[in-house]
Image 1 (cartoon, rainbow, N blue to C red):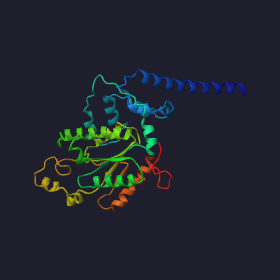
Image 2 (image 1 turned 180 degrees about the vertical axis):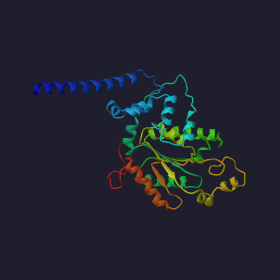
Image 3 (image 1 turned 180 degrees about the horizontal axis):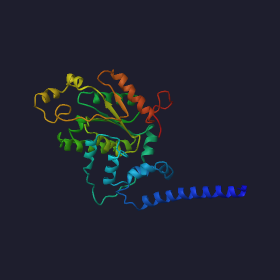
Image 4 (image 1 turned 45 degrees about the vertical axis):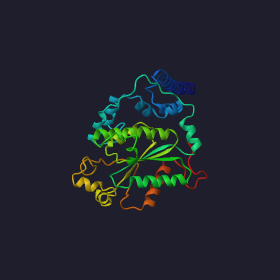
Amino acid sequence: MPASGSRFCQCIVVFLMLYACQSWIDYIETVMREKPQSIVHPVLEQLSFRQALSFPRFIKEQFMNEPQRIEAAKAGDVNRCTNVCAVTDMNTQLSVSTNVVWHRATVTRARREAQNGHRGAILWFTGLSGSGKSTLAHAVEEALHQRGCRTFVLDGDNVRHGLCGDLGFSAKDRQENIRRIGEMAKIFMEAGVIVLTAFISPYCADRERVRGIVERGDFIEIYCDTPIEICESRDVKGLYKKARAGQLAEFTGITSPYEAPENSELAVHTGATDLDVCVQQVINKITQHGIIASANSKKPCATS
């Protein structure tokens, strides 16, 4: 083929690529302009169109309706949970208020993170009662606070004194408990805060649902992996003793199931490892995820 013909073909290929790229950008612009604001995921406000081009799967997931999300979850496309029973629980649809419009803030998450000097994130500590979730979460918070990071711990017992004080421990109430905490944790995260949640959160589907309402990399699941024998030997609150005596119904690990994470970002053996070592493992993990800067950095925490 003559050189002129080859150059012509190259020009055609480049033109088609540019056309396809522009068509995708136009599509995103149209969707974001015409989609009702109460439906558009607020995370999209933080994405430039160039960033959106890099996350076609993310865009696809955000615009899925609930039935589509459930089917994708069963196929393993969205939900990382492989427990079939847990995934089935996701069929429970949550109501959404009508006649509401998402109000766009001028002070964005990115600006708050820049001011804080680190990314906002959810560190989700899960495990049996007595596994050391609260102890570890507060110890990690102390370490982060010493580095100048903005933090807050949402503790399982504490929230039941107020926000979730109307809930019991049935499967339905546990689901609602985690839903509320997930939404609250998301608000803290969007404020640029590193929020640490310490909840048994026994159901895989509930934890994955929280993961699904934030961007990838914003939800760090930390499994406090401690054998039930050690948890029961600690029994600081005397709850295992009551459960064994039949005085406490629906107690996780005894009369109610706990679905251990299969793909958590970090598993910490809190039953056999010193607390300081566990804290450092968590710090190392969130440093790897770019939530905070390394200790050798000039800045105490990472910028967004």
